[in-house]
Amino acid sequence: MIREVLRIARRECSIIRREPTYWFCLAVFPILIIVFFTSLMMEGVPANMPVGIVDLDHTATSRAMVRQLDAFQTTQVEGYYNSAAEATKAIRSDKIFAFLYIPKGTTRGIMNGDRPTVTLFYSNVNLVAGSLTFRDLKTITTLGSAKVGITKLSAIGKSATEIKSFLQPITLDVHLLSNPYTNYNVYLSTTIMPGVFMVFVFLLVPYSLGTELKFKRSRQLMRLAGNNVYVAVAGKLLPQFLVFLTLFYAMEFYLFYVLGFPHPGGVVPMLLLAPMIILAGEGFGIFVFGLMPSLRMSMSICSLWAVVSFSLFGGTFPLTSMSPFFLTFAQLFPLRHYYMIYQMCILNGFPLTYAFWHFMALLGFILMPLLSMFNIKKAMLVYVYIP
Image: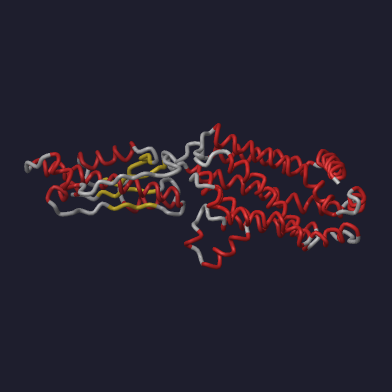
C-alpha cells in the first residue's frame, strides 16, 4: 500500500510540474502573501497619520498642544484650517483623518475656571486610523488641561505631591500581555496568512480530484491504487501536503524567529498545529468533493467556505459580540479553531490541554472524508465529466 501511495505521489509530481496552476498556488502566491503582509505592517502600528488643526485661540497654550500632538508617533499635523467646515471638507476628501478644534478664548476660559470646550473631529470609516487619532487627540487635550491645572495650583502654593494627588488621585499600573507593543503585525499576519494558505488548500483539493475526471485520468488513477480510493486520494494529496507543510513551517520560522514575534508557548504548538490545520483543510476539501463530485461546484463551495471564514474566525471582530447563531456557526470553519489554538497556546503560552476541544475539532475535519469517500470512488470509476 505504501508503494502504491508513493507511485501515485510521483505521478502527481509529474502533473504538478506540467501545470502552472499548481506552481502559482503551491509556491508563487504563498511566498508573495508572506512578503506582502509582513512588509505591509512592518512598522507594527500605523505612523504619521495626517491630522488637521483649527486654532482660533492663537495662544502659547494652544500652540504647545499642537506641538505635543505633532510629536506623537501615530499622528502628524498635516495642515492648519481657518474653520471647522474647511477641516471637515478635508476629512471627507481623505486628506486628513481627524482635526482638533480650539475655539477662541480657550486659554482664558481655562485660567478663569469656565471649562471651555475643545472639540475633536475624527473619521471612523477606517477603524484603526479613527481609533488611534482619537486616542492621541484626547490625550493631548487631557495633558493640556493638566498643564494649566499645574500652573494654577502652583500659583496658590500647592506642593508637587499635592498637585499630583489632585490631578491623578488614582495611579494606573497597566500591563499589556503577550503583545506589549500593540503590534498589529503580530495580531493580523499570524492569522490572515494561514487563512490565505487555507484558501489555496481548499481550492487545490477539489481541483486535483476534479481534473482527474475532466481529463479522463480517474480510471488510470484507480488502477494504480488497486481500486482503493483511500490510497488514490492519499497519493494525490501527499505532494501538496508536503509543500504546504514546508511553506507553513517556513512562514512560522520567519514570523517568530526572524521578525521576533512573541511566542511564549514555544515551538511544540507550532510544530503540532501546522500539519493539523493543513490536513483539516484537505479533509474538508475531500469531503466537499465527495458530496458533489463536480469540479466547478466543489471548488465554488470550498472558495465560499474559505472566504466566509475570514469574517467568522474571531480575529477581526470578537465572536462573543455576535449573535449566538454565528458563535455556533463559526465552529464549522477550521480557521476558527486554528485561531483559538494560536492565541491560547502560542501567543499566551497556555498548555495544550486548554485547547483540547479545538484540537478535537481539527481532528474531526481531518476525519470528514470518511463520510463521503465511497462517493469519490464511484465518481472515479463511473461518472463522466460534465463541463
